[in-house]
Structure formats: structure tokens, C-alpha cells
Image 1 (cartoon, helix red, strand yellow):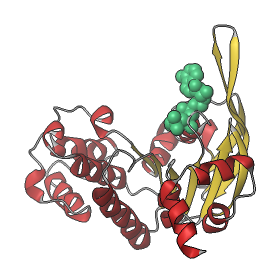
Image 2: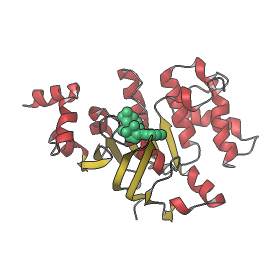
Image 3: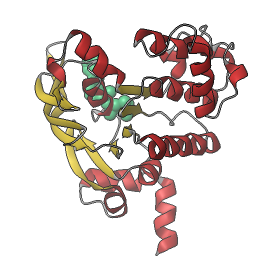
Length: 261
Ligand SMILES: Nc1ncnc2c1ncn2[C@@H]1O[C@H](COP(=O)(O)OP(=O)(O)OP(=O)(O)O)[C@@H](O)[C@H]1O
Ligand SMILES: [Mg+2]
């Protein structure tokens, strides 16, 4: 059984009498512990798919099965329990968290809300989470706005893993980071995945990152799947027009291809 199965997902936005089909009959699945990447040009529907999978956005049509449940039909306690297993990391943790909140507070929330640890246990759990993502425990009392972008993204990852998820949706989670920090965060994600068998739905416009991290990739074009398959095969020899355009626009990839030929 797949961890996540998305079937015929469609989302339309109505804007001033005009209808935009942001996601158009999209189907895919994610297996336990694997990384599926979503790539495509700006406006192709990547973040809308992330929002639909996380149930932050209601679809017009389609079905989402998560851990064997009809996820869109879940309510109440069952929904809360499933939400703990499906976490997210976005591009900008300053926008996702209250910037004045402390690191400890950001990590305390999921532990408390999901009843994972008692009040007495939580400081120890927070220290362990910080250690798990490569941060010093003395970062706990610092405010989110006082720490670096890379540290903030590690806190966002710590928060995501706090509830023991089986799937994390990462929407441009490393895009705002400079190259060396980006590499460290990608290494952390790979390490967490191999240790804890977490699956990722990894959204990125950077095909180099997609190629390094994902086993399979879906290329989106105007809300539809233009091409999908093994990430290396697709990126090294794209078959769709949008795939060729994306590869041509990726300077680092072009250099690699030239080196190889
Ligand atoms: N809340 C909204 N209201 C109206 N239209 C929207 C809304 N959110 C997204 N859209 C439209 O839906 C389409 C898909 O947007 P989406 O944000 O999913 O794209 P994306 O692939 O994540 O783009 P980017 O790479 O720029 O983040 C776009 O045409 C966008 O303008
Ligand atoms: Mg987006």
C-alpha cells in the first residue's frame, strides 16, 4: 500500500469572473520513505498541490488517501492524529512562525498540542530535537528572528519531525538559502530520511537539487503533469517541451551535461 495516493485532484480559482485551473486532474503516489519531487515553472500548481495534500486548501475534485484513510473525509480526533503524521516545511520560516517566539516555544507547541510529551518532559524533548537537527541546545531561549536563515530552517525541520511524521511536504524549503547552507540542509534531510524512513514530497524549481534528492520527479505545466519518472532519467533526457525548457534554464545542469559530453 502506498503511503499517499492522490487521484484526479483538481483545484480551480475564480478571479473576477475568470477561472484559473491551478491543478488539473493530477494523480500520483508516494511510497514509505521515498522522495517524490514536484518541479515546474512558476504558477504551474506546485504550492497548490502542497496545500491540497496538507488539507490547507479544499479541492474541487479528487481523492487523497493517506496511510490507508480517505484523508479528505477525516474529522475530529482521527484527523488530528493523522495530521501529526503529515508535516510541512516552507520556504520562509519567518512567515510560518511568530518571529518573536523563542525556538523552545516553536518546538514546544507540537509536543503539547499532539500530547506527545508531558510539561515536565518537554524541555528534554526539545533539547533532543535540536540535537537531532544539528543545533546547540542553548539556542532554545533565542527568538526566531534572532537566528540565521539556516538555523531557522533547521528549527522548522525539528518542528516537522517532532510529531513523528511519515511524510513531510517541503515547498521550496531550501530555495532561500545560500549554496553551502543549502547543501547542509539537504544532507540533514537525507540523514533524517535514512534514519527514520520519512517520505518527502519535495517541491523545488532547482532541478540540480531535485536530481540529488529525489528518486522520482513529476514535471508540472499549467496544473497538469507534463512528464514523470525516475528523476535522473527525466532530468538528463526530458521528453516534454516543458521539461526541455526547464533543463535549458538550469545553468548548473547545463554545465554538467556539457562536461559529460
Ligand atoms: N489563492 C489564490 N487565488 C487565486 N489564484 C491562485 C491562488 N493561489 C494560486 N493561484 C493561481 O494558481 C496557479 C498555481 O499557483 P501555485 O502557487 O500553485 O504555483 P507554483 O507552481 O507554486 O508557483 P511558484 O513556483 O511561483 O511558487 C497560478 O496561476 C496562481 O496564480
Ligand atoms: Mg509555489
